[in-house]
Image (cartoon, helix red, strand yellow):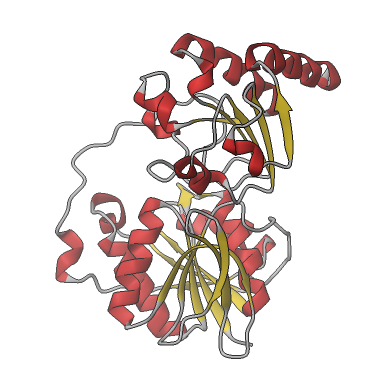
Length: 320
């Protein structure tokens, strides 16, 4: 059976959820071969094998930590040459998309970014994407070379599927460009205890209707009751009410959770572009004509300052 390369996103051996989703998709088109790089790569093997990786290619070198992106591209290119896969799957993060783009240029292949589904086709893998601010759904395939496809988080379920997980060392020869951009320092991100926004199964977002930074405590309380991430519209971020790192939309982050709750967000096209692929969308807005209601699965016309606390209390009651 044809093999599919899956780039492993991990932190010191802890495999992040989008990689496990990629393994689910990879099994639809071939046998997953995972590529784990850097410190802790060997510790990823058991988890990857539990989720369908028939083989795990590992490589560790200082370059992966000390320099940006290019060493990982060098390693993926070496993996492509060693395996000759039918596709290369990469998580659709900012770094993942840069790695995928550079790899596609290197190997002379086409690239598809931000796929939300993947299926086998007679002429190669077929990817589903949301286009034009998620107003249309398209199905595409790469017609030249080995398809390089980045996949948005939460696009597939995490499914256990025990496989051999045979470990092989990947030999990597670093290019001259690999040491071009060095990492001089790192500052750990301050943890909020909430899930990563782009990976969260539930996202609760606030917009202009929240009417102040101090009122985002209401949004945070609902998010915490649901074990959700907190998002914000551009209007809220531009007003200084919430950090840009939490912005959802065309100029922020794209999310695709199982549940998206929009509170006090009108639903401008720029915001919709970042969350329209969410599986279930709930909106709370006192303006019954707000564009967001054209998109939602469930809509509540009401004052968020009354509705959201009641919803939080109900969630806590059912949990407790």
